[in-house]
Length: 517
RNA sequence: GGUCCGUUCGUCUAUCGGUUAGGACACUAGAUUUUCAUUCUAGGAAGAGGGGUUCGACUCCCCUACGGACUGCCA
Image (cartoon, rainbow, N blue to C red; front, side):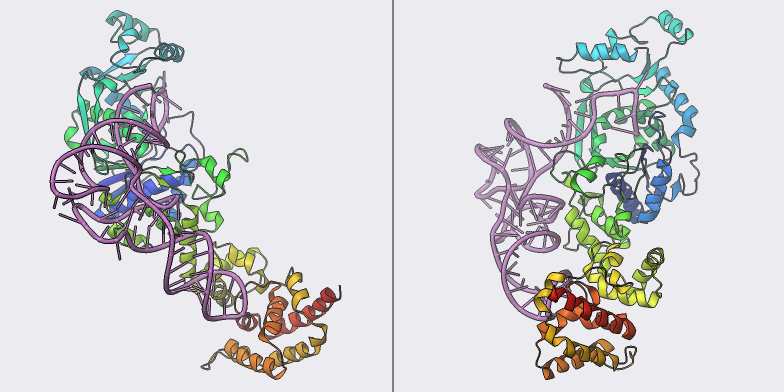
């Protein structure tokens, strides 16, 4: 039997990076087992619904390349609809089944009354609406049949709660954690249907997983405490035999280890925690994404995959295809993993470095147009080749290497003062002339134009009685303004004869001025 | 407070009773590079504590400590 997994986010805002990892693991298991990956949108809380959140989730999965096989936004399959708000009636009928079987009951307590109860139980060990407290509350278990009918006829708002059975031990066999058990005496009577007629997560999730024939529930550890309730609900419906296997993932923790990573941490620690940028209503609620930071989705996926899982080998770089092949639930760790931004950056650098120049050029092209640079893809490909070992983020290409597209904007005056000698000006001018004699475009020979020039210039340095350190750094600054960057002759070759000529001439005048004060 | 889960270098992790406890990130030093980056070499760096079980425990069991999640008519 082929497996079916699902990712079931709630559209309450941008999808957190931890959610992306949960989606990833679901995707990987489905791919590995040749199963189906379902995207279900759990929008049962109308008060927290955020417009655009669903689109954000879909766009994120597409960007990451982990697309569901069926579900919202990905071709509705045979179990449509996949949005819980569109399945409202369904949940009601299932809740009624539990009422009829005596596994659930009506409760009429107002929020204020619940508050009073919690206050009263403050010092008790069990503070919940449960088997020990429900008799003291206003529900169809404590009230007479007549009172209940009266309340309902009056239109009194009510919820439906799960009736937790007395004194049972519920054992869950978690694929990651092994046996986890709960005693029903500790479990609370969870709300199944809210007063607004919508189901809660606990009901909707189980009904849908059952109806959609989900075989494996891979979700965050925050769900572990309610897994006992979920098992009880399956049992109440008589669905024990088709209950999915559970796998509760370890949490992604803050870099300082204090609690799970939250959306605020991005701003606090200075890194993205969302895959894509999100425009919230306020500045506080807006976030920069990994994508906009200049991350390659492959790097994000690789990084996320290894945050809580490992292949058992010393391999660190995995393509999505390799992950699909090698992934297994058994190798997922139990303990939470701290978010390590340095490692994320390293992965990105690795991916950029190993991307073919022409691919980089394709990505750089629209950005260069945006910046008003008028260059060919061929030029961009060569440029990418020179820069790719020197950038961590994609957007650094045009920032750090801007001087390949326009004039130098700032010179390293300190280095100019240290190195430029007025009396050498004439010699440098002859160097300019030397460059003029080269064929910059000859790429047929065994030796590249850059190498060719390098040889000649070094010879020129010798015959002029100069040292490398007296010439090369200045050449670099003249062309780029800074001491950092690709090999000088690579820059010379890419910039081209005219540009080199122009820049050197301009720079010498500037150098004179700087040194003369 | 209660329930549940967790605990190997600073961080991510390997080890499925016998290893000089391995790798990666980060860091430090060196080599290469005219610079920066890359690459290479080297270095420091770990089994929370205490009891068991065992010929032998990082590995199995118990206790303690610490950390986390949950404790909503949120998911």
